[in-house]
Length: 322
Ligand SMILES: [Zn+2]
Image (cartoon, rainbow, N blue to C red; front, side, top):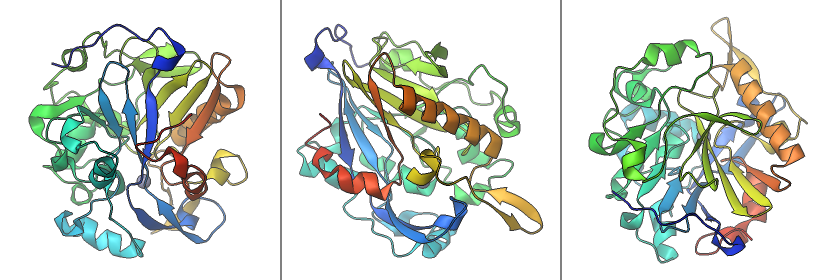
């Protein structure tokens, strides 16, 4: 168990968020925006350091040794070339003076190959994942072929799967059921944490990770089962919202472009498993960005935003925002 000391009380003691480049890949933009062009995009991860000493990594980017991906994923990646897998998240942590064995918590926005990196590098970490993720990894699910996921991706004794959020569940979320009893609870990993979903301001389902209002795990459904975002208060009046794959382009976030759909075998498909849900999640994020939170500004970061990546090199670990 990692012990928690008292909640932050001064402006200097908010969590710190640092950028960890997690490799680059090429995404066909017509899958995302309803206008086109392939793009070289980063797969960004983040180090979040809580004042109590917890080192959290949000997402693990691309895997450096791509031969270790499953055959199906390897063949998919050949459609995403050119791809750059090194340095990976562990390298970036080490360059900044932090060994990956000192990370106690990894939160995965979701388990697509470009976000899961090399979990084995994180020898002491618990892996927090959204509802349904274990079922997805083990068996695949409706809309998700099992071959696109790796059964043994995460160490079974160090997974914390969050409970189903109290909202109308999508088909695949219902299908995930409660087959997998929690192997380890959030409250035994972070003392004082209560793993129950609660409304936080305009966000319908949030978990206050440390019970001190500094870091919230946000239910952000639509892209794939178990998709999570992370909201971090980095100063009294500044928040960072790590949006994972809630959308894939700053032009969608700004409203300049819409979410794309295309035709596959006579069916209209979208990069998000549930487009309506993804659009509703996006509207929540857009409103947060527009209106701020508790009189503070909210910086929204999409995992694959190349413009944001270029503009925020100064935040690469061991530096941080602000
Ligand atoms: Zn992605």
